[in-house]
Image (cartoon, rainbow, N blue to C red; front, side, top):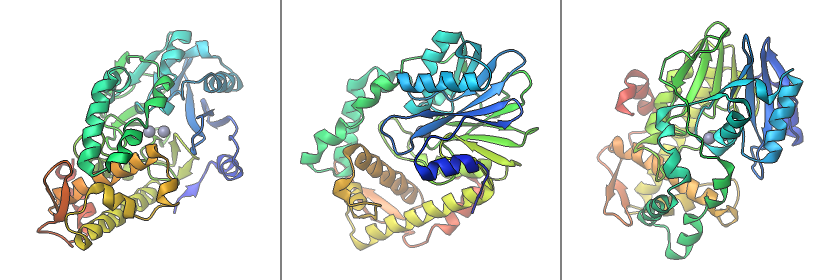
Amino acid sequence: MIDITGTRQKAAWDAGELPPVEQVRPGMWSIPVPIPNNPLRYVLVYVLELSSGVAIVDAGWNTDDAYAALCDGLAVAGGSIADVNAVLVTHIHPDHYGLAGRVREASGAWIGLHPDDAVQLKGRYVEMDELLERMKSLLIDSGVPDDKLPDLNMASMGIRSAVTMAEPDVLFADGAPVELSGWDLRTIWTPGHSPGHVCFYSGSRRLLLSGDHVLPRITPMVAVHSQQVSNPLGDYIASLLKVRDLPADEVLPAHEYRFAGLDRRVDDMLAHHAARLDEIEGAVLRTPGVTSWDITVGLTWSRPWDDIPPFMQRGANGETLAHLVVLEFHDRVERRGSHPSRFHPGPAAGSGSADLVAAARHDPPQLA
Ligand SMILES: [Zn+2]
Ligand SMILES: [Zn+2]
């Protein structure tokens, strides 16, 4: 269990409200920036005061409301949008990257992103035809029935407007310091939720800005999709272990609320994925030849499957695939055929997931 340090954020979360703009450290603020029609409700943008101007970590969704909330929050922190010198983006998702271009236009700030997310910008937001074609192929390979295909394939087209196509000015490198006066931020590359996801760590302040990598309540989506690398969950597990033992008194996530107990939270999330791996392997053992889609529909969900919107059904299938890839990697399942791929028990079926986490701890590259 974690210790919740963002108690006002937690109270606001429970009440279904936006939390206040808060000073979280001397020279450091958190601004909740609303996300439209999303159960996460807001992204927490962090403001870091520099010797002149400020840097922000993440930017928010590209809507007028979000932009206004960011401007208002900066005013509470004693500044304005024109003071922003740098936009450090943890990853390419629209709730983090969406407003970056607009902030740069207003302030002249530089935008920083990891190269593995930067390379996706064009394909993700511009060359949509190819992306749609690849997604369709992935869905057919997963065993999605014909009548579900059109809805699932078009499921995320609506979010394109949420991001302006802003190329980054700075590319973050794993382990490298971020040049900000008065701050000792270091980039920690944590692929998994997205290929180029990064966290930022301050040793002197004992803080981890965790983006979507480690959140206090939910596990971030880690899914195979048409722009995701071959073994995202393997990467994600290795990335969790990469941050687990950092000396951090507090974790500043991009959603929900601040907390302490990074190692305990990481262990909970590893246990969650281990259990899901076992559950998915169990489905393959019970029904050899099952498809990813059939496994997904048969898993336990927080509401009836048919009430889950297509966008989230597709994400759920991508998460199942991410677990299947890890199981495949460890010879616990075997993939046969394509369009659709069918899964059968592998030679190491039934060996359990406890070893997998232990192995990742000692030899992360094996999973990556
Ligand atoms: Zn995200
Ligand atoms: Zn997010």
